[in-house]
Image (cartoon, rainbow, N blue to C red; front, side, top):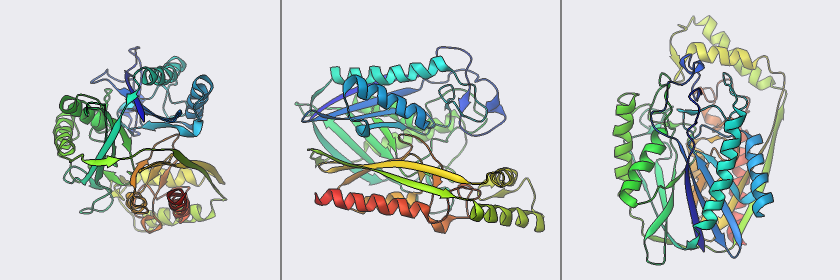
Length: 413
């Protein structure tokens, strides 16, 4: 096995740009500058002339059109299988908007869009140039005190943090992967300066300890954040949390050998198509409840301002039908299983999938696109993720069943 790695800055060169994340009035104005730079980290894994490329950026999300353009350029230039290209986002809510064509208040910047794609290509080239023989070790622990289930006070989300380290011939770690499931939402919607947020700050602090910048992959974090642990929403709080989490991650024993061999993978499609009857009925039920119970518009319902939920439900009543083809994959490389998903999975699903097999499992949410929240049926109507959503009850479970079956089939082959 050989591994290559790369890291590049993605901060804009122009002074005029906008932030993405949240839907606050302040974010409709240009950003007020750069507090700290955003980056992309990449890893290229090669086994018997077959490659897996992981590109992770300090972005909120990826649009599917851009993902496919990056994949096309990489596959045409380097002859890599596009199914083995993972374009990930750290789900950073204080990142740049410029690459996004369809953000609700955005100003698309074609020049920056091309810069990001060129950086992905340059990252691949750098990974090729830095390839070296490697072995791998991993470790994981449940870490508490910094984030939890944001919809159920006192309950954990998927609080397991996993670390993979790649070691050179001398046994020295030189690059690695961190898989965690938490929203990068320490800084609140009133922040209007660019920042790499929680994953970026933890990444920098771990580099000081490890000598390399780990690549971050965010797992099933749809209902996971620091909502009930936060002591503020500013850079002071970001420093406190990132310091604590970096120390906790650094203390994870990374002692288990991870064997890699041939690539096995399955790419899946799942179609959701309906006339929105159930969704409209649920939205009307919520709006009737608001009107009949005369709820205060300034109150908080399902951890979201009531006024925002009202607007969400009213807007979805204007959508006559819904159609979505979603693509996801399971990749097995020896002892490692990677599950890619272009959306936000509920933490219950993340925990369940990790228990499906005995292998080391990484869940890569926010990867190769972005479509909606996917939470268990029991959560519907209880949170802002499920009130006014076009994803019907029970549909996420169908997707999880496909992933579980794929994991079991690849383990037997």
